[in-house]
Length: 189
Image 1 (cartoon, one colour):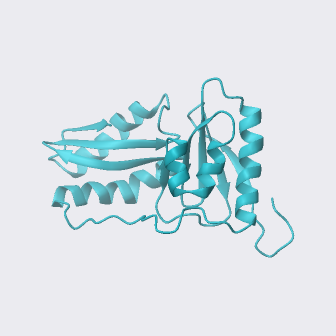
Image 2: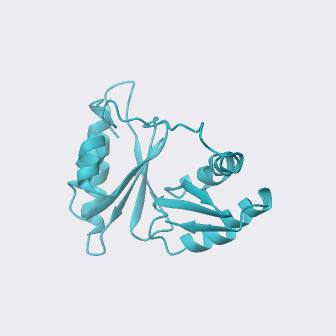
Image 3: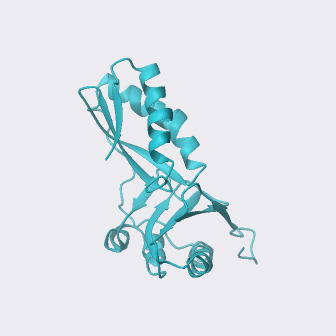
């Protein structure tokens, strides 16, 4: 916690189903749409907060959600080092009112070219699936739809999670197939 003003920043740790990912809840909105970073170079170009987190030894992935940050560590990363530095970095960055994303990083997407099936897929993902997955510190993002197959990106705690494939097949695929008869399969890309 950062004390001393009416805009105190609170950061609390939550564990995720992924043994290599931790989730940090924050008491304010950080972004409108989740932002996922898998390299320090990408983070440097788009997010001052993510760039700082990639400087923590052992961190190999950062996802910034509406009111949380997930960090993934390498197999040889030390959780004590990662946790202590991550929590402190987030608190200090937000307390200084520094930007989470660089100015001009577009977080909105143009949905005008989507087919009716793609719009239905996105609506189910946005309304039902993504909020549930965000509770575990992850995200599932629509990539494309082709010949009955829905291609999705797993991000944050979902990327590399031992239970991700079961969630994808038993949860997401079943829900989409139930609502949209044209959907045959869901695949992670």
